[in-house]
Image (cartoon, rainbow, N blue to C red; front, side):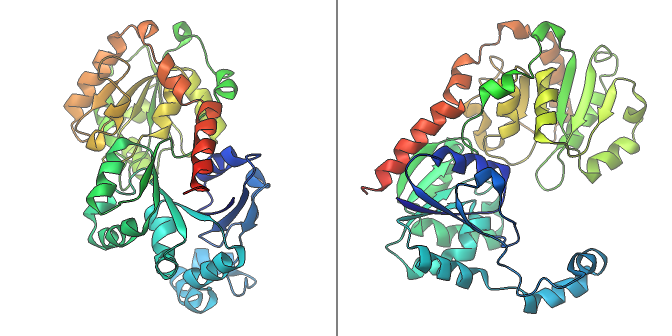
Length: 375
């Protein structure tokens, strides 16, 4: 079967696509940004990349960095039209199915083309805040209402988003709930895991920005200096807002506190593998991949629960703790105190982990794609 995948270049997409390697399909990738170079991680896929610019003129990056407004003006005349380029590629490939990853990134830009081709099968994979957050933004909601009735097949990373999709007139076939990047390579991850008895780290995801709420966690942590004196506190993936908060806080003087910016994924796994507790907090997400990875690495999760998505896997107090109000520092403080008293040796997540193993998920996904050929 010919499958044309439409996505930004991202680790989640590469991992998902690689589930279909050696599955007998002819797979193509249309890089919706048009700016990626060929990607070696998916070298087996035919890639439509590096198509966006009419002319990659000398000094373009310098102009982009130093004179952003001038760059934006120039690009009005220097960029190829996304929909037209996709339409030409679609007609060239003539796939049996198009698969878009993330609505506002990879569905909205090509909706006019897909409406002109009503018999073309179209899969949409909902990622993270794709529906839950953006349904509250009028411009994005307009796209959601236009795209979903045209979609034939849907993957989501939580049950919540299937219900949202139906609310906005998705009437196609639901293909199931899977992590956005497919399953996890548990054997590879195993090498980074320390025994629980050797762990004294509390790991905090450092996202703020639009949806992250790391600062609420740090405010809660700050009031627990005595209780947490025997733990190592590490913030990873911190964005500028979080660094600014820490630099203006007494936290920066704590000997057991460390803050890190963006680090390689392998380094994140190593940190998770030595962590007793993992804390992730946001006002919008699907099923958080970082939380899933932390669970696989043996950390006990404290995680926000926007729209009830996290509660689909985490039973509060049994295999993790749920933050119901991501802004409530008192609630977060209470949960941290509860977590450090829990006997994590008794936490059982074996079934959850087994169901999200890469090979297990891969086989299920391959079977689903196979059925599309006969639809």
